Image 1 (spheres, rainbow, N blue to C red):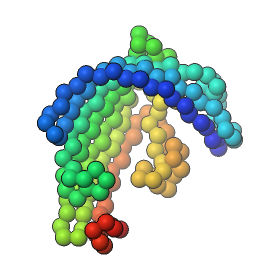
Image 2: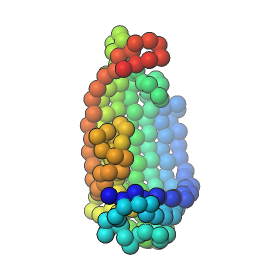
Image 3: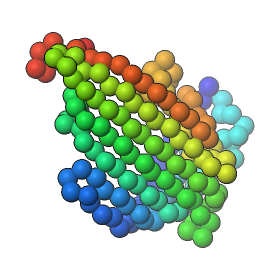
Image 4: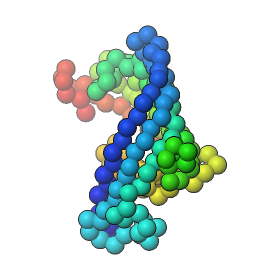
Length: 174
């Protein structure tokens, strides 16, 4: 297994609309450069061509969010829905053309000292294969915890989680 260092410089210009206190939509253009470098280990041959090279990415971006959570850090009531998309286009400087769409949704409810939650996360690349440097990655804390951060990567993914936490004191939950 290889340890890679990823450096990214990113710029984005959006136009958007706020829906009161609870939501917004944005549409814009984005441009970035990505550099991958090997820190240690053996790199898979699919990544070899990208090492120590500058990868250009540019395209149209979309994001929309509805946030009805009562607290961003430890919610007890409400829901959140977030949809984002990237259409990487050669005409905007992208080396590879592809589409990437991601949805995140969650809902929280509390009864007494117990708070339950459900979360849905997913991403698709309709009619295109994501380049190896921009795949969806999973692993690490709160994202398939049994795997190392970034250990799982692919063109599509889906994740459904349910759980609860118990309030011991005003600030401490398990």
